Amino acid sequence: MDSIYDFGKAKQKNRKISMVTCYDFWSAKIIDASQIDCVLVGDSLAMVMHGFESTLHATTEMMALHASAVCRGTSKFVVVDMPFLSYRKGVAQAIDHVQTLMHSGAKAIKLEGVTGHEDVIQHIVHSGVPVMGHIGLTPQSIHQIGGFRVQGKNEESAKILLQEAQTLEELGCFAIVLECVPSHVADEITKKLQIPTIGIGAGIETDGQVLVLQDLLGMDDQFRPKFLKHYLAGKTHLSSALNQFDTEVKERIFPSKKESYS
Ligand SMILES: Nc1nc(=O)c2c([nH]1)NC[C@@H]1CN(c3ccc(C(=O)N[C@@H](CCC(=O)O)C(=O)O)cc3)CN21
Ligand SMILES: CC(C)C(=O)C(=O)O
Ligand SMILES: [Mg+2]
Image (cartoon, rainbow, N blue to C red; front, side, top):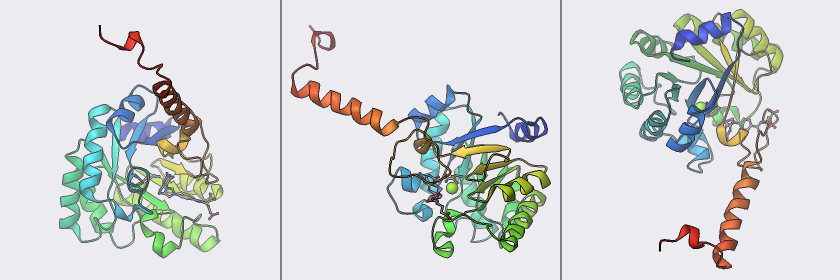
């Protein structure tokens, strides 16, 4: 994907979009060499990379630092999350955060929700910066939601989700993330929108799928939400390599002549 137009084309041609999160240079290079379509520098980095309990601890400075490292490692389409409250202090402040984030080399920003910051979304779009929406489970609202729970489970909340999605499309978003919503709700939203939906825990019918890189690589065997599939026993393989190194050091196997200068 080179531009936002490729997202629209993918939906038109019924070609699925694959997206993974990425927070650093070395994994960006691995993703760059893969077939993955596009990359998200998610604010989940506060949890995955920095060990915080929620995404509320991500700041624009953190996001920009990680995003610039990612952009040095890949030429793929990079989207960066706007962090908690950075788009809730009015248009002028939001645009300052967008400026900092876009200077990292990212090609688009993503922000959560819509109610109360419609003007901000529109202003960012009108400023020439592509915006990806994000509804359903919006982790920046964890304290209001009360936990990482599936959203849109009853008819009323499902209807609100559809309205939010349509508003985001009208405001000019080029794509929308649907996080943790029942499959039939994601299906209906996907069918009613022109712009592509990218799901995480939103079933098979969305126009694309996004997962956190470390999740799909199985780096944390404790984190097992229903939507997640492990494509590698990453933690097992990494632990085994580390223990092999440890053993070889202690048994005086490493370094051998081969790894030593004469
Ligand atoms: N590593 C990581 N991966 C993610 O996908 C992710 C983050 N971090 N941090 C930010 C949010 C939080 N996410 C989460 C975290 C937990 C569940 C979870 O445990 N879900 C329950 C559903 C409970 C219900 O039925 O309502 C599950 O059992 O699947 C879901 C999304 C997704 N995002
Ligand atoms: C899970 C994705 C959609 C995200 O917003 C993040 O990683 O921060
Ligand atoms: Mg996020």
